[in-house]
Length: 231
Image: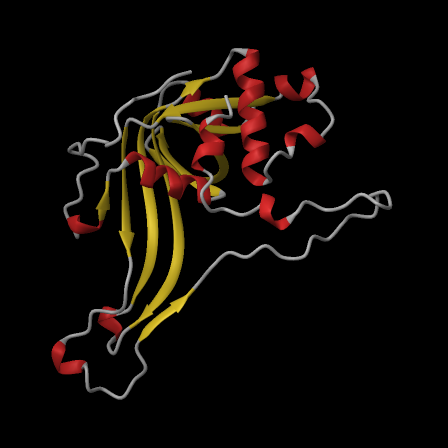
């Protein structure tokens, strides 16, 4: 499957930032790095006038986002019917503490993707997408696992959403206090936040001598090249 060759996503009426437009990011590679670092997206859609926003796992492959879940799930059934969808991913990098409550904020990177998802019916593409989901969690994990069964494949639905109408927004740096507040005797600055890999905890059935995944396989930095070549 191939996607757009453009390195920049053009802003549309739906993705153009009206507030703090200087924080907008439309460079495709920068946006992809944000997606590759995250684990969870929120999928928003409307069914019969009722809005839903469902958190779920995802994987990016080239210029596409893949979503998956039970074939019986409301989200998968609704989106496979062509319902418009909004997929968001947010990474929180720090708490921004100002000298006034008004200027407190969060340093973040966020991505918004709009479009219509397509149900993946080709068995080869579907299996490749499941491999991408698995390897997005732990690098090269798929090759360590028993093969997926036909029953598992049939019970899982996979949707693909092209990354054609999307934007990112990023806030970095210290608080922006009002000039008259700078002498106020309260600490101000940024409290960094980061997702860290902890010590793996084996379940009771792991045979002796089987090592856990190396922490570097869970690292979320600079995964763009790996994720582009999954399919």
